[in-house]
Image 1 (cartoon, helix red, strand yellow):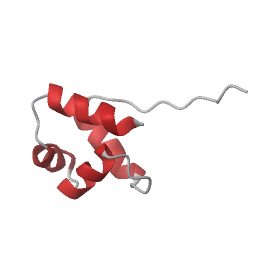
Image 2 (cartoon, one colour; image 1 turned 180 degrees about the vertical axis):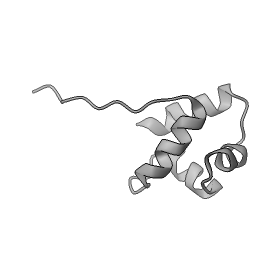
Image 3 (cartoon, rainbow, N blue to C red; image 1 turned 180 degrees about the horizontal axis):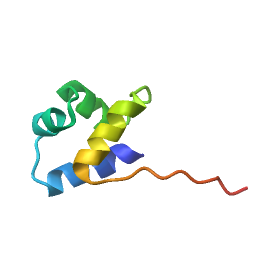
Image 4 (spheres, helix red, strand yellow; image 1 turned 90 degrees about the horizontal axis):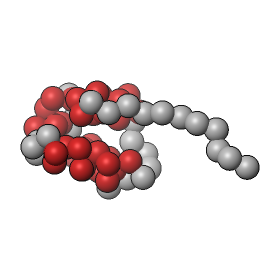
Length: 64
């Protein structure tokens, strides 16, 4: 899922979870949940975190 990619990018940028949370205006608990692929995270908050990390979310139709 995306949690691992978010964690990897955060580490590449040299950010701790608490620092990412502050920059994205979300809680540190939210960042932990997101990085562990908790299924019930709020999309608005996910988008804030992705913006800070310079990442984008893309959707595509599943094959089959």
